[in-house]
Length: 139
Image (cartoon, rainbow, N blue to C red; front, top):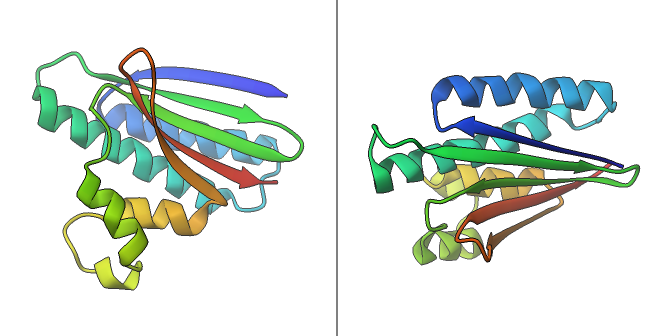
């Protein structure tokens, strides 16, 4: 089992770093659904960065963490921030809308993409005031 945590500033540059990092990890571990993994993590990070900028502004020292646990059976990923989680109306969209419903919408596609591409997705409020989007992919 491997456990990896990367803490990054909430910037586009850090998102691009994480894209390349996850691509390398997926290649190293021979993940068959590499594109789905990279895209899902990318979407979770975008949501995190945008939520923190909305909540705290551009000049705040925002960070997010990317945690990955890799076993022979699965990958478990958490994108962790302090942006107070996903609003309730976004949770409802996941159960009501399909990806086709939001294809041309300004927002809301990312979570549906993650839900469609990953084997499991969840949200968790952590004891330390942080919030995480979690996802799993079987290997």
